[in-house]
Image 1 (tube, rainbow over the protein chains, first blue to last red):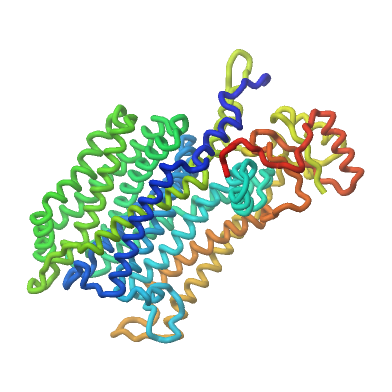
Image 2: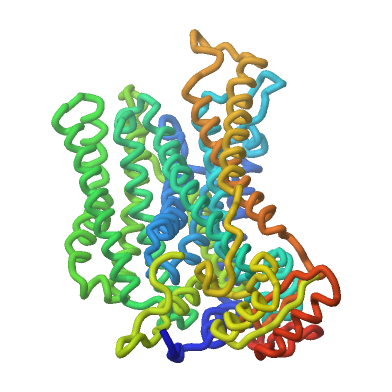
Length: 455
Length: 178
């Protein structure tokens, strides 16, 4: 081998481009953060109003004691599912196209699970005793009850939020060192502390890769367990419509469906806002679109299996619940089926759609609208029509619940907006590693990539 | 103590490593500082032995014990009789044990990683140059005395090492980063 050809972009250029998101915020950024902050503040007011008055300001009433707060909880846990999981799978499978996507996906997981973790606490009637949810020795012999599914949720979410945060931090470690070396002021202090004195020695890289592989392998079963446990919140009860063995895998597939869609949506927004068209290319959307297609097919199959079992068995209580849901919520049900199944399966088969950014944005937003409706349709109709007809009753969320729901979306967006201003939104050392690996060297008359395969 | 030489690219750094080895320094004394990873042997040969996996396994086992004791032990020590249900319920115990196992394993992996990297290490006698982040390659030699350092610096100078920045280590590439 001889003469190395000049790379297309220098390391400095790549750093400049990929760290551009951390530049001094513009007035538009402040305006966005201000609007989002105001919505979150309104949600906080609604929450404190609920705490200081009572739960009668919500739409909750017997028998529907799990309302939109739990819908939100399941939805946000579902969204959190894919970020870290997709990132882990792509890391383990050494898919090179993963590199520009990693940070957006991992950060999404951390913030969505943070939002999700708030909802069981918001849902509690007496929020100030939220610590009963945590697993600790009950020396007072009152609580916590380890048999309660809420306590499993708290344990699983604590594990997942810790693991996802560590996974995000691990991925950022070399990037923080790069950011440290070119930052000034408070940013330099922040990056210096977080980079832990990273210098990029050969030994540090070796251990770093071992740790990345281990964390990727560990975080996947945790992600699966979290949504399985959320599914068990429903499946281990005897409520008609919930008591189903297919719920855990069905929930996991649904979670991946909405999570992958959310990753694609965020990729599109980040790409546009931070001018990362050179890094998040149509190829990435094509590949993510294929992944979305496979998951849409799996989700459609799981939903069909769940419904056809109810339909064919025609067990009276189950059938009553299903009939009520399909007749009283026909519009949302059709929206869900079209948004989560028919349109994704029909359209994502086409490469032109997968590579069309506006089409992907519309489709992925529609999938998540459908998935929110799906969570709603699982929870509300089943509780409305439980075993005893004389307590059948509908549910309409009140202003407090709607305010908190909107504030949750704003809160997630705010966290993401602030994160994107402080930390690099593209895994820059991962991308630069790929550039170094794919740099061409002349070999005879041919040009070969500098580094083939793994070390 | 360590001596740092900074090079424009991988090829120059590799030549420097060869010359350092020829000058009597061992592979174990030499390491590279890069902002992207290179396969073992491109610049230096790494001491590949690592106990990180065992730290992860050990942390997981510790987590399993902690989780089991928390769930089953709590139920056993502070029994809450509910109907005819078992005091130590297997299903919740299994879930709590599993989650705490994974939590400990993940935290253990990160702690083990930093232990093996010997981080955190802020400042101290650890030569570094911020230009490494911009694609330059550092070659660092661990020596016992000043004489060894002078010898290493001589080889580095002969192989085209750039002067390192010691005082101002900030590269003002992002001028508006404040």
